Amino acid sequence: MSDVYGNYLGFIDFDGKRYWDIREQYIYPVQGKPLEKSLPSDSRKRPDCIELIKGNVELAQENKNTMEHIQRKEREHRDNAEKRREKGGPKYLYPREQKAGKEYDGKIHK
Image (cartoon, rainbow, N blue to C red; front, side, top):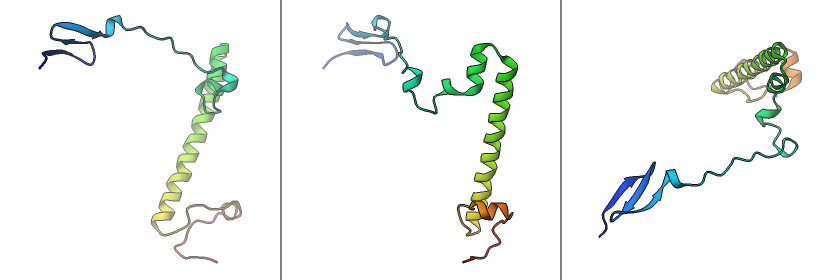
């Protein structure tokens, strides 16, 4: 049996001998992928971040507001789809149905 002392956030001693200490751990630098090799969803590609880095604060705020508006509309569409599904309706409304302003009426149309 060994006497173990320490914790995972700091150090671990076995029988009075220190085997691991976070303060002695080498911290590897974080290296991100180059922007051209990153995913389209990488936050560095957001229009508001790009403009903010360039120093265009007003344009960055405008881009952020536009993006938030789009996100709110998408959320509204998801909520409407969930309500349709709860009534037994289709998950998706296709463009021709959306243009006609149709909402699910509880009936199955063929």
